[in-house]
Image 1 (spheres, rainbow, N blue to C red):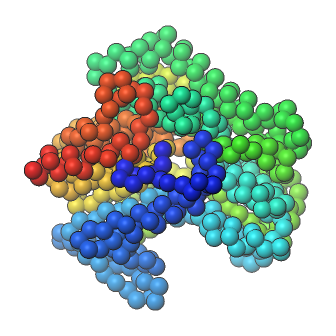
Image 2: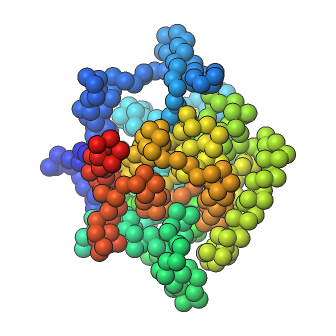
Image 3: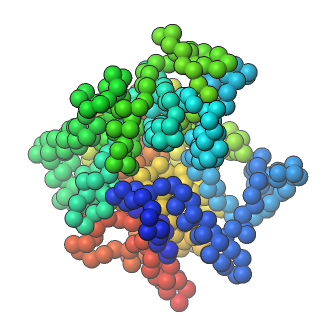
Length: 507
């Protein structure tokens, strides 16, 4: 599942490799080499990047986009272009809860997961850093817990009692046969048939009707969901793992993978569960206050810490756009920022779309218990989560939340190129609005805890990327009848797409 279509990821012979799960440093090295070795018109990709820039605001004047940015010397630059691609994605702005931002309360370092690579190579290597506290319940927090234990630290893991709870972890083995791991096994078109998606081909499609609209298919799918969740819990052995600390059962998750009603992850090491079970003090409590060298929990527990690491997620906002711009471009925004006419239009569209979603996928009418964010937001109003409906000169890349960034980013780049070249057109306005509303409604029903913004498409990698290339009119990534259904869908499938695109539109 790793790497782009034109350059495979290669590893040193002695690199640890657990069913295709490798250390992050090898992906970093791959990307560093990628930007140096891709040269166009005499300039590498790296040479085209302005490092150390902070974008303050973006405006459009007549037909020109103006990006105002400040460099590391605080010199202001205005960059202009007729087209704009915003590719900051969903993991650029760290989110740290307000209680952890009290000035001068905690005298030790507080670091977000975004800084963990550097922190791991510096602060965590010092002998003075003995006690590590980690806040968060998801995969990023778990990675920091595992790494801190491996560095010999005393680790305390704080998971909010009023949050979504600990993550559900898939096992890396489990693919078997032609699949390197369970992730590959789940990235086939056949596996995708069991996952409701607004991008799934449905018109007259017997497979869809059999799985999602018959009592037999729905009952089969419910059993499949239960068995999948239980197999993850069985692998963890929360209640009876040998050698586990008494607090290890507090990591038992209530998350269902199908519904994404909490954090998900992949157990990427053969000693993953034993490392957590035998070495980590788990606290399922909220943080009530900070002291100079400790963290105080709601139950009065005081945790001494030499550093506090936050796996507390990300802010998905775009601070260089005003609230008015965000609404105009179709970015998620506060409902109060809608005009009355827009609010009425999209409310009606979503209501009608929700009825269609539940008719197409009746199983979505009865989700398990879930927690909804207390942040009020509209859903995204962009075609394919990329293109605003009112301005063909701007696109947003990396906005859709999917399970694999390599395949997603390459497919989006292909679609965006065709869109800016004029070879892809958005449907007429009313049809585009109905398509977007259906995507929004399905995201809200399919992922009730995370889908309110309408761009959470975690298990829709296959159908989403297929749709993008279908709209461009490309097919070289398809593998033939049988292989098309059972082979994993990877970024490497796109290896011939560039030549196909050039032959189709410019030969």
